[in-house]
Amino acid sequence: MIIVMKTGTSKAEIERVTQEIKTLHLTPELIIGEQKVVIGLVGDTASFSLERVQEISPWIEQVVRIEQPFKRTSLDFRNGEYSEVTVPTPNGDVIFGKNQPLVVVAGPCSVENEEMIVETALKVKASGAKFLRGGAYKPRTSPYAFQGYGESALELLGAAREASGLGIITEVMDTADLDLVANYADIIQIGARNMQNFPLLKKVGSQEKPVLLKRGMSSTIDEWLMAAEYILAGSNSNVILCERGIRTFDSRYTRNTLDLSVIPVLRSLTHLPIMIDPSHGTGKSDYVPAMALGAIAAGTDALMIEVHPTPSKALSDGPQSLTPLAFDKLMKEMAIVGKAVKRW
Ligand code: PEP
Ligand code: MN
Image (cartoon, rainbow, N blue to C red; front, side, top):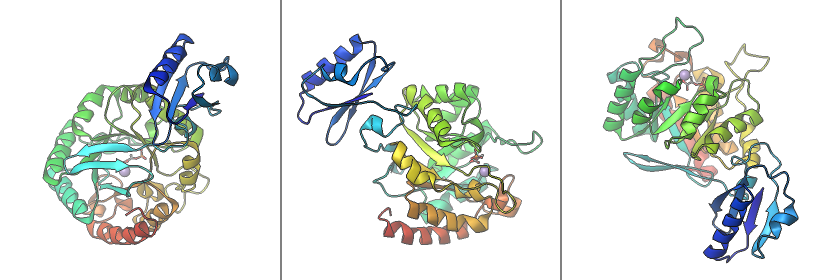
């Protein structure tokens, strides 16, 4: 349930209303929008009628029941106002949001050595990326596949951050590693395979670093948004949703089916910013540019693209990685589409 206050309501009256809500054993959450103040009511609101809540103050314009199972994540909870996630980086704040320029994240699947990560960082930065991605802890299907270099890879990401000024996005797989990963990451990634790892979601929800939540490979949109709700239900509302392709019946030509229709669907359901990952979405470097351009046209707020100095020698995900040169070419094409939709 949310309460929309009338324009011009005094701070004292808003305070009085929030105090009264607490006496009903509900938690009030203040959302100060550009036009209106909205008070979200968290808790068991089922037993309260809209009329009962309306009676609390003559300054209440409207009381609305949120029908979806996800509350803080829903667009209705913010009365239709989209949220932004602001991330400080050495090169300045980068803002993810519907009314902001497109943010591009690029880098290798895995951090392999200092030379390759620093070289990639400098190159993708020169092409216009704002974040460097790179895995230190890798979720691999086979226990015999390269698992990532762990803490030493985090240190190399730190070196690349210092050399380039780019923000860092890297994945955490285990609650035990969270503090360490948070020391190096500007955004913490929860991978597709951990989208419903509830202890991990709770733990990233209880710390301050922004979170990139990838969609599980067989997850519905509702399951994905409920996973985001776990993070928002902590105290962390800085969540970005990343579509990275889902399992469908046909995986002969692409690794996954990139669901670009999530962009308008998510826009109708949630206020959270949206990222698209066409690299894991297609699994083939040749198909990445078309999907990246399509995602921009469809209104994504950000893109994540795997880039490796020598894809044929990559320790993971080489077939879907672009060379720095191909990435630079793609950035120029993305600028054309981005400008057309006023996101560049
Ligand atoms: C990755 O970003 O390298 C990764 C493993 O992604 P996903 O969790 O989407 O498979
Ligand atoms: Mn990868």
